[in-house]
Length: 65
View 1 (cartoon, one colour):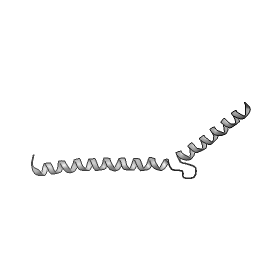
View 2 (cartoon, rainbow, N blue to C red):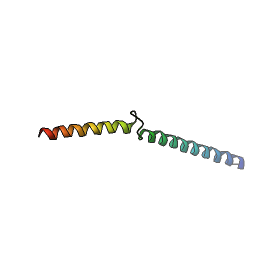
View 3 (tube, helix red, strand yellow):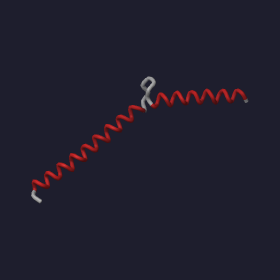
View 4 (cartoon, helix red, strand yellow):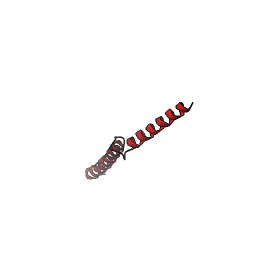
C-alpha cells in the first residue's frame, strides 16, 4: 500500500470513530434531559407523581389498621 492509501485508511477510521463518539454524546445528552424535572412530561416528574401516590396509599392503609 502506498502512503496515500494509508492516509486514506487512517482518515476513514478516524472519521468512523468520531461519528460514533458524537452519536454516543448525543444519546447521553438526550437521555440525561429526561431525568431532570421540567414541569410534567419528563420521567423524573412521572416518577415523583407515582411515589407521591404510593405514599398516600401507604398512609391510607396504615390508618385503616
